[in-house]
Length: 221
Length: 221
DNA sequence: AAAAATAATTTGGGAAACCAAATAAAAATA
DNA sequence: TATTTTTATTTGGTTTCCCAAATTATTTTT
Ligand SMILES: [Mn+2]
Ligand SMILES: [Mn+2]
Ligand SMILES: [Mn+2]
Ligand SMILES: [Mn+2]
Image 1 (cartoon, rainbow over the protein chains, first blue to last red):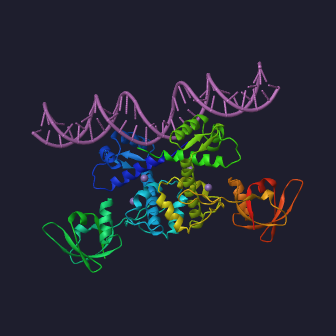
Image 2 (cartoon, chains in turn purple, green, brown, blue; image 1 turned 90 degrees about the horizontal axis):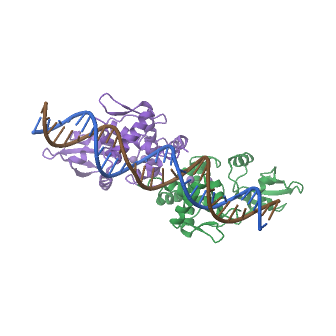
Image 3 (cartoon, chains in turn brown, green, yellow, red; image 1 turned 180 degrees about the horizontal axis):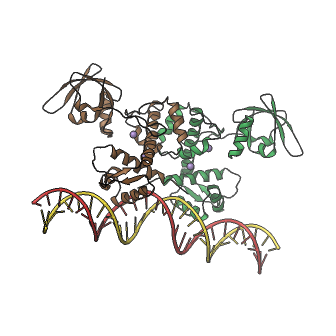
């Protein structure tokens, strides 16, 4: 019987997808092993399996890369993940910083039909609760043209698109400040010394450190 | 790592629960092995494990039985299964004969909080789409006082409560005839020769064989 | 280039579910 | 009761996903 084996495989595909769009120049065994939290030997074994299944290839520079079919698979899992996250927040009243762990389980439910119906039921949302766009049923993803708040210009208005860090402490911090995807803010000023900024959100002035502005992605608005 | 091992274990607990309320006098290895579709050696191994975890005991007559904590676990899985079935029919417009396979996956999502919220969101339904009552969050199940349509009295009115067989062909057959839990019917007549009956549903007369009436459970109405 | 540090790979295991086939025990039947 | 049939158990595998430790590249630094 095929069993639940796909579970692990799917997590590797997702991780590889994530790495391919991260700042890491070379997606090697170590990077993957650290992201996924498994022993390098384990990772090597799985990568070989995925290469054998034509879901992953090794580039000339030795970096790992998803094949088109591997990337499609990854995007369909991400689609499920994000749609379930919308369901959990919109329908079950979870807060946006609680849904990720649950979606980690739900994303592995095997049924494309189910997730398509879910999408329809949710009214074809464009983004998940963290502002990340949801791939369509063919695995196509609209690219977001966002810039880090770090690079925003003082005096201009922006809309928060999404977050570069999904760490729970970070999300809770933002939640307290009422900062989340979709919100409109104005960059009031920037402190040249430590690169911290002041933003205005709903008539309130909020100070944010450089570390925070690096991880908030915005678009001009 | 604990892994997804609970998946299999949970299926065994559910199967044992099912057998304990079936007509089988003695719940032995063979019965369990047939219901769950695994090799007797595999089943024995798992049963020993469950006995070790105090979820199953062996009665003096050698029959397998769930312990109180085993039964509670089983009922909480059944709770999840049935609530997800309600969700799939009520919200995602699945028909009642399609939901079982999907619920087989969803029942293993680990989070009691999630299922409690789901229950609230669905408006605390009393029964699943097949008419089976839904255990509460403590694992308590209201007993249904139903009789097989086979034993119903000609001339009287009944309401369909649930079904003793969940075979897909059977469910599709009933679906075509518009027979499902909640519907009101009248037992018009019984043929003494082959024990078939005529029922009336929405002014229409429908003939049903003995095999079918054995598997439809009703209450007087 | 040689030494040191880092990364990839090999080797030898382990746990959890699974199976088939052989044997032992129990139950049913003659 | 002796024989046959059925059921339980043992034994010796398999697959998948995981680990630690040793070895072998490959880079980086000196
Ligand atoms: Mn997430
Ligand atoms: Mn996952
Ligand atoms: Mn079901
Ligand atoms: Mn199941």
